[in-house]
Length: 440
Image (tube, rainbow, N blue to C red; front, side, top):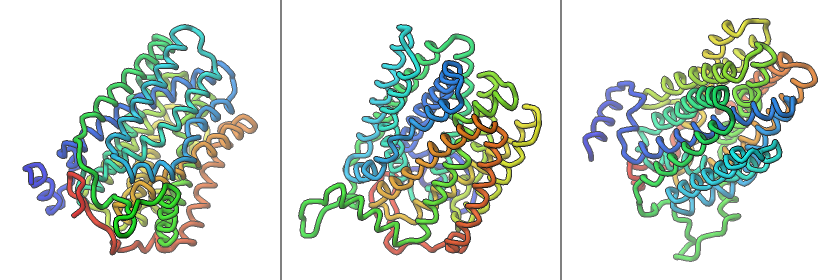
């Protein structure tokens, strides 16, 4: 055991909060670095393309549609989960990073040669969504593989913090470059970051395939096909009501709250506060800063004893904080509210991920998280709904509908799945992993 591992375990035993403890593991550092660089590029791309589409078409609905297009690959998430469980997760991640770089390079070329039009963005973004979902699953599985069970909570907190840190830096950098230099230089920055993420992924250690993730048949027979693997994962979830409830919340928060911090933030900022692209970047950065703090605070302690109960509490408060955004206020008054709103967003995400991973056997992590990724389909639905409501009735009505619908469905879920409040004990079939990903 390394000195770093000994220090991590000693701190966990004393209950010393350390939000960065998992970064002492070499492989997790590279997993984390690759994801952060990739998300910086992705968030820059989101803001740049949303602003371009809004100015080019003048339609909030088109902004919602470009955001929805990013998640068309979610329908393949169960298959991707089987792929992640079957193949070397490091190689899967590198492949996803390379393809993201290639697609962004194509779009950059179109921009620099002055032939870029709106439909190009929809085509490239649609293709990129197929790769994005595979990369998300590979990253989640690799994150769990490269830390010990006692560090899982910390790693999930850092992963969520990575997403929000990327929103802060990516939004500010993307908005600043777009405003100061134009679309071309902004996209050069996007491609550069995607390439750096590929390099970081390639530095993850080459490790043999884990024995516990082998999907072989009895008596050494050939492992089952992809559809059989997917069916196994679905059956596993159906037999555990707490997983069903957690996956419902994965869909709910994507449908009601995440659209407001993605492309619809552009509509909200421009219509309610008269913000330009830099101002929208500041709004997203402030909300993401709150989420960063919420994720770090939630992940700072050695473990969460009842993550599903924590999820119920944080999601309820999150939706309650959405509703005051409909009030007539200045941008300066809205920013503190967005920051607190973000704190509960970060805490909710960490509670959700810890709950799912704690209640899932390591051999099925890819497939269960594939179903969780499928729940991301709530985001494009929420973007389309919100874009239509904003176009027909205004941004204030859009915000109010998202907040009240989410609050009502949270209360319904608490009644339908009472196990979420009670919590569930450790799985009898769960296995922990050590920092190099071997079952023990």
